[in-house]
Image 1: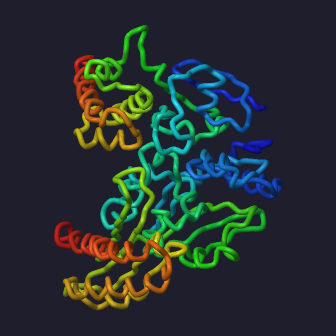
Image 2: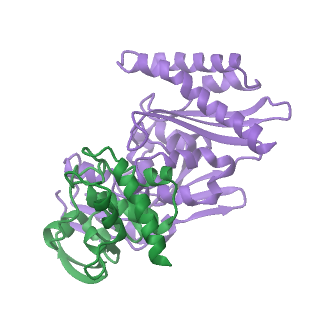
Image 3: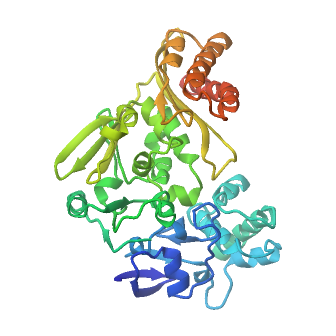
Length: 158
Length: 290
């Protein structure tokens, strides 16, 4: 066991971890943040995507000890005082969710893109989501939701 | 996984000491290859040493004509760095086509080389650039051409106590352009089936006065293609020279991949791959340089 310190969804954590743990194991099994899903465990599907130090990463491909000192945002961190994030709202409104398994990862990838590029083209949105696989929906409604969320975020910024 | 102890490496010297004191240890940077190997028990070290946060390994520097990339530089860092637009475009393109945004944010150039998959995407452009590796241990430093390193990894490869520190190459001349083309089964999250990279210089008569060509996934490791280079040196870009270049590469592949079930597919596919890589260079000249 070893102790690490990190910030998750704006909360400071000091946790004991097993050295064999991946970040996804820490988030789900140790801290109960089960919004992040494990689809493949190989970095191929993106269901486990979270934002680490401002970048989208597959949490199944990061060892927990490597996250010492880092700033993590998971899907649980998107709500603001009980209000859904514009991306979450847009996904619901556009009907972008079927089984839901890929969704937290897909939203986190899109958020990571919008944090860096607030006004992407549709192609750039697709590129930002290119590491997230969905077996249900065919992706189009998720891309529509991203475009809607961009408008919501622009309105909110005014 | 079988780990007993893990370390967050604080500096190059710290890592070299840890490697020397822990014979059953492995290094981790982005983790995108090694975590899979650990979970599949392909390797079972007792100790893991993280090098992903060591400042000197994460720098991209230019000293006069030499560009030095730290081994823990991520694909995203390369894609975002202006140094690799312009005539180093092939390296930018190779890094940009790796995996997915999540993989590019963590995966490193050094990891790509150390993991040494025959399909490693950053390696053909680095071979075309004539890149060298700087490798260190507590016993000292050594430098080796990437091209030579790959040919004899049994003797020249990374030893258990060694750390890949940086990759360096000379900036191409103004009349040279680095290109890259990749064949994968999808547009993203695709392992390369074939990659081709070329560093080509055109003289004032639009004839090729310098050429280096490297391939990936069509041999045991990414390698130079001297027969293709010979067929193109001194020539200009036209349909005839292109067919000659394709033929010479197909001949080399027939020898190297003889008996492999993928040969028929790859020798057909190479026609358009080689054309794309070479025509990229030609396009750069007509559209950008003039």
